[in-house]
Image (cartoon, rainbow, N blue to C red; front, side, top):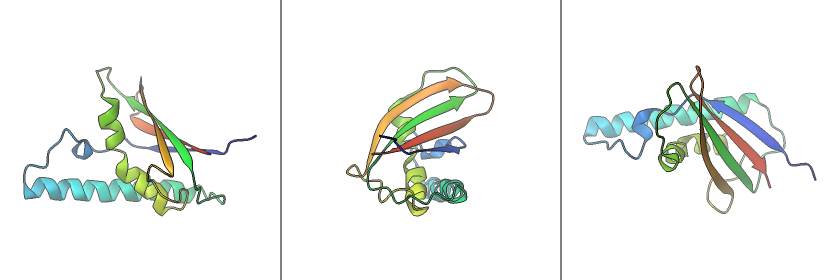
Length: 126
């Protein structure tokens, strides 16, 4: 059986989307809201340009490969939480039916070092 996969390459999410970055003020909440909306739109644009005709997928898995410029300790749970708005953008673009746990299973995050920071999301249709 052939599994259909889609690789979505995005810039790293803004730091303010991290659960470790508390909003702290009205300006902080607004910054987070704006960043979330922009990142969602970026994911939507990238997936829409792919012209995937098989969507929306009822069930899928996603794994994330984060590329950073510097080697540091990274928290995979926080990194995956920062991807929420990207998943929403992928749903908006029509690749996935929904990003709830009954439709999308997250397989976790891996980290590599590269000169061009980015995140690669590999969606696999189940």
